[in-house]
Image 1 (cartoon, rainbow, N blue to C red):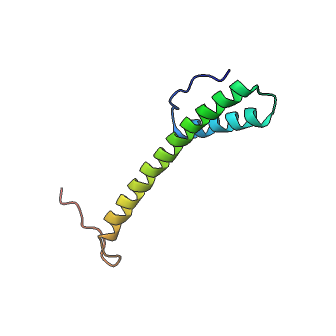
Image 2 (image 1 turned 30 degrees about the vertical axis):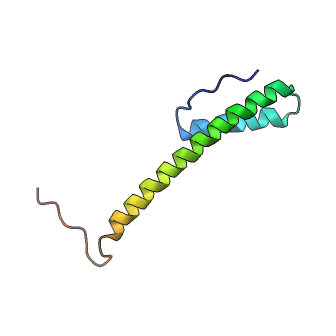
Length: 81
């Protein structure tokens, strides 16, 4: 039976877990109940990855918006401190 779903330590860890699940499911030696458990765990990891990527995209958009607010011809203002 598949291990219970656990929160991955990182995006990269989640991808590695997904790869393991896919490999196990592709082996075709998995009993139906185990395959369903793996599938369920994989869906949870997929959602985690999608959420992580969405947050990263939002951060990039914020950074690009902040950078775009400055003119390309004008260097950033010097910090007076």
